[in-house]
Image 1: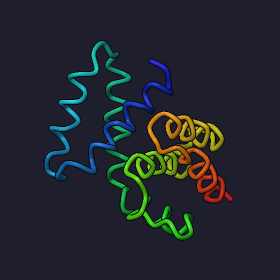
Image 2: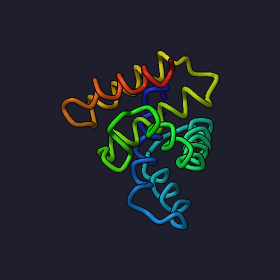
Image 3: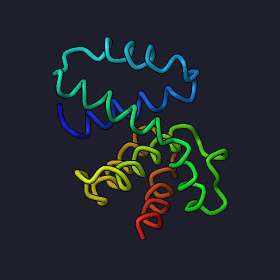
Image 4: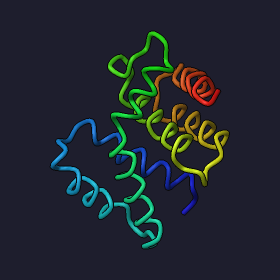
Length: 132
């Protein structure tokens, strides 16, 4: 499985967090993982571990988004755009294995696929401002 595919699975899990109670998180992740299909144990473990790590820092990440996206607090963002930015900011701030440029480019691609029409340029701008 490619890093892009792995990142998309993490995005989907994170997106679901908005619609489930915290105590349902383990069940949500397990159900999603059961339905992925053929996947290596290594990739499965990576997706689960990274999803949990991001979820544990959502409040902190949201504060970073609110500080960076002038006039667009997390409460005003679409759920897909918010989830994409959470994933990218986690990668920029906490994942030393992923270069900032890759995190931003992958976020833009996710936004083109899952976000609103202008989401990719908005996300690109916010993330570029964040890394400065």
